[in-house]
Amino acid sequence: MSTPSAGATARHPRLAELALALGGFGIGTSEFVIMGLLERVAGDLQVAAADVGYAISSYALGVVVGAPLISALAARVPRRTLLIVLMLVFAVGNVASAMATSFWPFVGLRFLAGLPHGAYFGVAALVAAAAVPIEQRAQAVSRVMLGLTTAILVGAPLATWAGQWLGWQSAFLGVGAIALTTAALIRLWVPSQAPDPHASPKRELTALAKQRVLFTLGVASIGFGGMFAVFSYVVPTLSAQAGMREAIGPWVLTIFGVGTIVGNLVGARLADKHLLKAIPRILVWCLVVQAGFFFAANHLIAGLLFVGLVGTSMALGPALQTRLMDVAGDAQTMAASMNHAAFNCANALGAWLAAVVIKGGAPWSSSGLVGAVLALGGLAMFFTGRYLERREIRAAAA
Image 1 (tube, rainbow, N blue to C red):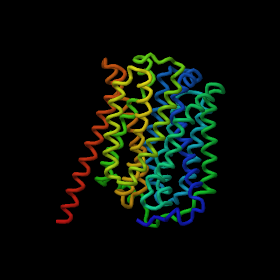
Image 2: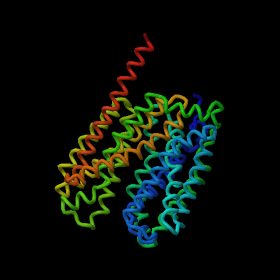
Image 3: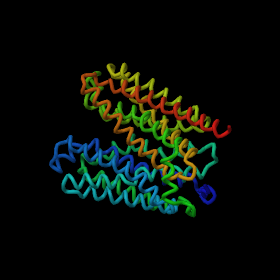
């Protein structure tokens, strides 16, 4: 595949990465802020707080649907143009969400806001990776993903605070403003790239038929689920088992956010040194820290420490994104976009399995054991894929 190099025309590569990361910051804030505004949204739209979960699921569904659909239909659109359009759609989805006056239209608009998510991160990762030497690709991807991890640390808490004081609508209006700013900065700082004349929806869809792509997405869908299994129930876990006071709750998100930033940066360096060793090592680390949370959750200080350690599971993100670039062949956009759809599947899988175990009578901290099992599943998926890959290479050589 002939891919234009962003680096050839980017006068300020770091500013281009900053623009791309700002879009990730807006997306991350939009995705996570609703969890802190459940009761506000429920009160204004006259539904039970639990029903707002439909809006969260609707957003995740938008990510899963939008990633392959947009990647296929926009195969011949220049990447900078596509990024701008995606940010504009994202802005419309969030501003319209803020203007919703009843619940089910709000749920539908959250689906609309989720559609650009996977495609944006996938295309942004490709643009960032093309602007640096090949041995620094994962670090370039991690700098773009810093927008997402910073949203967990800063964006979602600030938007939650604004939503509590000014109304939940202000949080989504703020995200819309970030999206519009991102679109303008991408136009200014991200270099234009000529579209690949051979690109087509059919070619992008071939990614979904590649064995190595599917196994990598499987690692993301399963192995990454453990982080979400723990994070989804971390506040009630520490409240019930460690006696954590309600006032400490916001700090849990901060500690987790610091962990995701550290994991994102360290994981990228490991991936650039030796990608195929980094992925299983990170999964083993995820297994250890998530299992450790099960034992640490009975003590507040230890529990908070392990919240941060569980957050470092984000190290898997840039490693898997880089692996997909290596195995996708000509279907780069589809594979890169599907990585974030897989992460959302991991979110749903981890939270659901942990809920099943807890409702079955296990302690809240058993979410950590669920996470460990999912990390083990990710390892099994990785090594199975590698075995089949080696067998295929030997057969081709023979």
